[in-house]
Length: 184
Image (cartoon, rainbow, N blue to C red; front, side, top):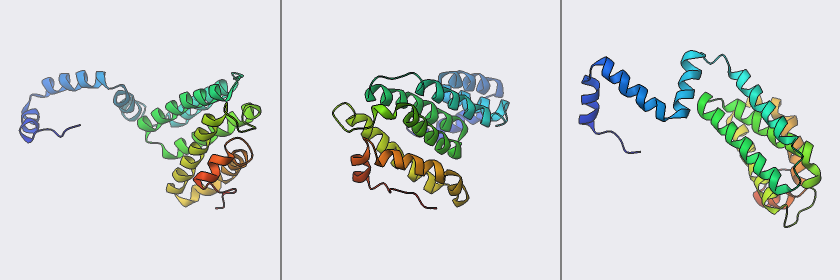
């Protein structure tokens, strides 16, 4: 997005307050993420963070229980859930919650659909690659969090890595250099 012209910035600053408010509200109506973020920060005062995480956890549980019949469906459902997690991050700036929810998603889908991801074949290759890349992404994001949080995530990460290294994503996990065990 191009930067605003300095003359335009000055003209906007000089506008009467009521006119600026009308323009701001019209612009906000076009950006749903920004609107939701302002709702979260200004109206909810960031008090609903845990409730928002719980809603996404419930969505993950419902989606993982859909009894998918192929690895492709599993991957598509995981992508849908990932979109909700990304939106949660954009709205709340909750990096801890993003890692927690991504780990929860990956482990929950593994728990419910492990039978579809056991062997690497042409039906599981795309899902296997997706899962391995997501696992890599989780490890990177955990590394960026404060070291005090690493202990909280250790069990879940090791559970995920166990699933990744002993099922269809194993080849992709080795290619990406994912560890077999995550040590704090």
